[in-house]
Image 1 (tube, rainbow, N blue to C red):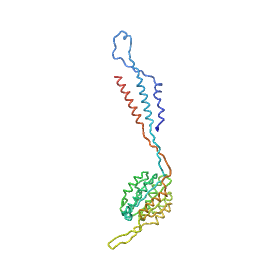
Image 2 (cartoon, helix red, strand yellow):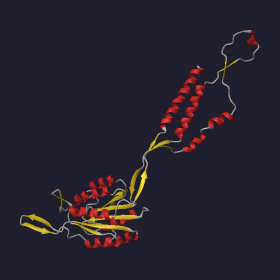
Image 3 (cartoon, rainbow, N blue to C red):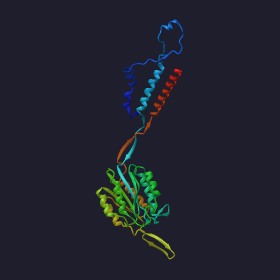
Image 4 (cartoon, one colour):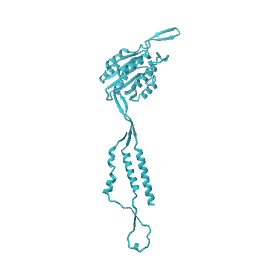
Length: 329
């Protein structure tokens, strides 16, 4: 359907008619350039030839004025309503980029991969499923950085997550879990939103930063920020050497006690991801715990149409001006 954005401009449509009534009319006349010396001419003080207005020019002017008013009212074509799911939730994803995330104890397509690559693969599908959520991304190592502010553009978040690499935050092998939580609290509480969620993924313990993880969790709980923590890393890993094979625990530095306490303080949950399948299951559980769709809103696409009547009005004005120039010549 056609919609006028400024319909009140139609009130000025009769303006030329009021000017015609209120202002005195001016008769266009032109002085004769040559006088024939007849006797009757000497008895006249002045001789004028009056050119009556052409009716078709008047109609062109009326139509042009009407088209200008229509263009000024800004006509738009409104399309069919498009349903948009808005969850009303702000979701921040904090990913550990410390050196230990380079440990290759995950498998994707029968190929060993490091923890960061597995995290990217599983988190990508999770982010793309969060239609209606505003999503942000925090990367942390020795320091915590806001990589992506809260946005509905999920593809941008996915792209920046996949472009991240170990050491992008700093060169020191340290982990600042508390600072990552504190940064999430700062960013999420700036917005007036009912539901705030932080998903924190790490494979170690807090070894750097200015805020302890439990203190940051208290701040998050006061701001009603729910934190889900995920501990990444296998419990056993087979190492081969010249002296044979031996089993080690690549996740010996994982502080599960602190991660569990953080989740409990904020009303979230702690998950353990020992392999790729477990990590994928965790993201599916998070989809169930934090369902996407809450409210539905409708958007109607708009297409501007004002340039059509405006172009036609200018064309009619050009015709009128051309006629006036020719008639005077």
